[in-house]
Image (tube, rainbow, N blue to C red; front, side, top):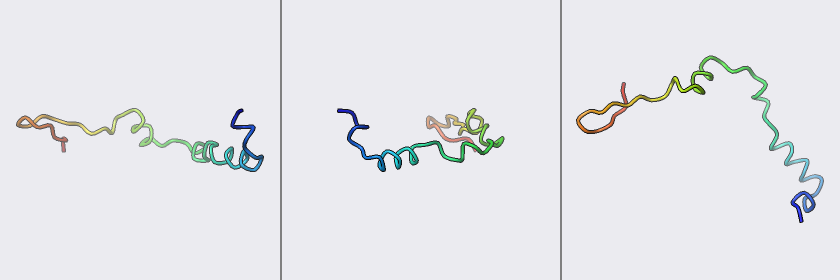
Length: 56
């Protein structure tokens, strides 16, 4: 038996609304968003005295 057979029509409608992509996808991405996606704003680390520390 499939899950879709067990769920009521109201539950299916609610799940479709909850799981659909949000309206945020309609907004254009900013330059900062693209930099985060591409990995430009990652933390950088360096080794100091045997330990690895975040560069400041």
